[in-house]
Image 1 (cartoon, helix red, strand yellow):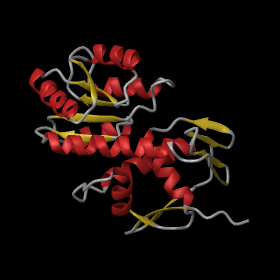
Image 2 (cartoon, helix red, strand yellow; image 1 turned 30 degrees about the vertical axis):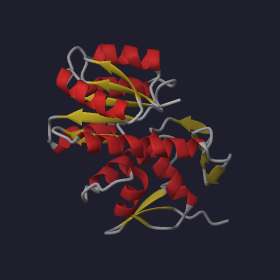
Image 3 (cartoon, helix red, strand yellow; image 1 turned 180 degrees about the vertical axis):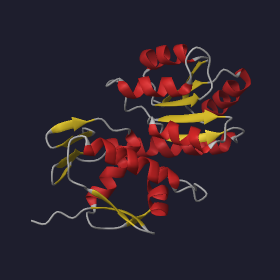
Length: 232
């Protein structure tokens, strides 16, 4: 069965363009034209991915993203945000709220399609993994159940935060450059925008620190990040 994608935008020509190209590539596409309709469609369809415009009537993209991430049944659905705005603050806020990716209008359908494929490919790859649990210090990651516990308390992570934590914990002590993490987790050329990694690391650290006073993710100045080695 093909993946289901929800496309949300108040510009009908954008919706039709994206819908046409996604359906041509074999995806099942559902559409919505405002924030309230988007939330209703997410609950009804439970799509594999949401392409979400930022500037929407009734409820903007930020609020839609926030509500999806707060719902335990929907929180793991990947979200790609669309926006005509190019300001850095909009991009950072979108990522902070849990968007997996951010595309600025105007964009090429081919670029958007590549990003959709990259995200869905990673989700599929993760679901096919054999059962595996990584436990370091007071953090435990269940790769098949998509569950993370810190000091016995479950924490809610976005798909990208989960992937980032899993990569770092799988190789404790190994330093990963921002460029490597972009290529490995985002799966395409981000044109050097390594701040995307920094935003996700900052948000991940905050969620972990709510349940632990131990610093687990370390910054290696001028290089990237690593997960602290746990000595036995």
